[in-house]
Structures are given as structure tokens and as C-alpha cells.
Image (cartoon, rainbow, N blue to C red; front, top):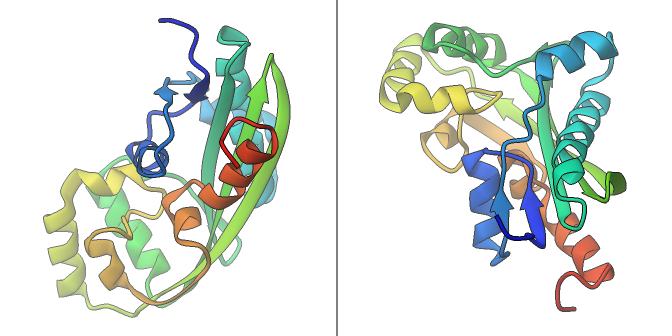
Length: 198
């Protein structure tokens, strides 16, 4: 690969779509960060701090390989009534997640960092509060059957930009934060440092 100017340290389709939709020219690379190992090493930590820590490690992993590029690392955590949720590994687990969130408020913490030359230049975390409606079991079964394995790509087992919107009564927060990449603060930072036209 040539020397990319902007790298997304993620293979998340949602994050790629957000950056592409904003018209940014970037390369997406897998950071190769073992999130479970990072979580074990950090021990008990609040959801927002965990999101920042993971975003930093992803950005730094790619920045070490492409030191001249601006590398964007992102991560998202979900907390509900003191419990942290991970991405579900199976559809049965996704169903259990949705049952646990049903009728409750949960918070998404979306963190983003930019690194260059192996150092973090900037970090930001945005929160969104989502109230999941008390949907019935029949609706849940149809939802899981319709969405299938796409539910495994999201920490909350939903994609707000699709049928997942039907799970909610109320949402407080930025749309891009819910998608996992707080876009507007990132664009402002890139303009401030001259990486985007102001």
C-alpha cells in the first residue's frame, strides 16, 4: 500500500459508511487489537473510559504501522443499569441482550481518537441515551428472524438505520454517536489541523 493520508483503524461497516458518506478519502485497516485482553488488563472501568481506551489502542496499533498517516480509532460501549454489554456472538445471545434492554434506558458511549506517529493527538467521547420500548415476544422473534446475523455487528444487537428503529420509544443524542462514530467533532478536529478544507 502507498502511504495513506487518513486511515480508519476499524473494519466496522457502520464506521466506514459514516466516513464515506461524509466524503472523506480513507483506507480502512483491521487494528488487530484483542479487546478481551485489553478489558482483562484494565479491570473494572466505567463504560466511557473503556470506549476511549479501546479507541486509543486501535488508533495506536495502526499508527505504529503508518506513522505519517492520521489514524482514526473508534469504539463503542453499551451500559444499562450498571451492566456492560459486549457484541453478541450468536443470535440466541442477541435475543437475550434485547430482552435485557427491553423497556429500559441504556447509554451508548462512542469514543474516537486520532493518532499520528504513534501518539494520540485528539480524543472525544459522545453519549446517547436510548429508551427501548416494551415490545412483545412475537415482535422480538420476528425482528431476530428478519435481521439475522446483522444483529451480531452491533453491541446493542440493533442497527438504528434499519428495522432496529422499531425497538425504541425515545432517543436522546447524536445520530452519528449511535452509529458508533461521533462524526461532527471529528470533522471539526480535522478542519482545525488543516486535514480538511475549512
